[in-house]
Each structure stands twice: as structure tokens, then as C-alpha cells.
Length: 110
Image 1 (cartoon, one colour):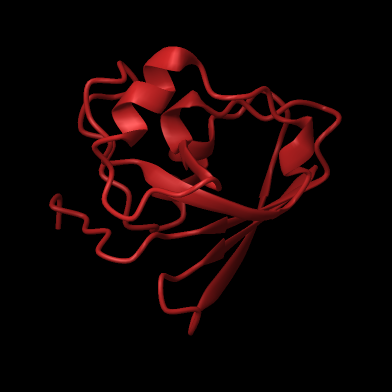
Image 2 (cartoon, helix red, strand yellow):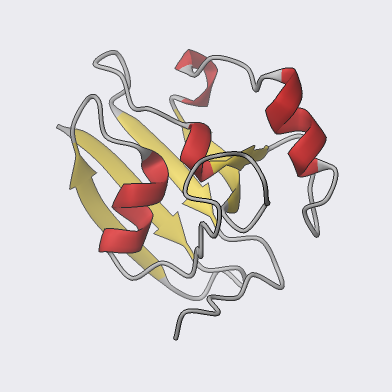
């Protein structure tokens, strides 16, 4: 199992969950009440699943594609830790990820 720690934008709240290899980070986040909309459902036509990867096995993830980097240009508060959760598939060599919600993230589905 893979340990995922979701951290609120202000750092005041953490949610620890378990995931498995093959899971998509966006699906795990949404299943555990994280404020990620994922409007385009992984088609990379929006940046509503923008997160900051701040710890864990981030070095074991493949780098973002050129298309993902282009979409991150539209994400509020994007930085070097920014990724689109819809583009992250967990692999067996990952044991943990720390995922922080960026400031200003909203879930418009509520």
C-alpha cells in the first residue's frame, strides 16, 4: 500500500489515506474529500486538479509532460512542486506522497 498525506493549503489539516499501485492521484483525492474539481476528467483541458507535491517519493514520479507543463501555466500559485493530480498514476515503487493543496483551491462541485 502507498501512504498519501493530503495537507490543506494553510497547513492546518492533514488527511492520511492508503492507495495502491495503478491508482490515479485525482481519484484518491476526490474519494477522500479533497477540494479538487478535476473538471476535464484528466483530459488536461483545465488545471482544477493542481496540487503541490511536497514530500515522499516525488522523485520516483515521471516528470510532467510538455502538455501538463502548459496547463500548469494557467494554475494559480504554480511552482516547481506543482503537478496535475489527474496525470499522476501511482506505481509500486512509491511508498508515500505528501500532497499539499495550493492556496485558492476551490471545489465548485459543492
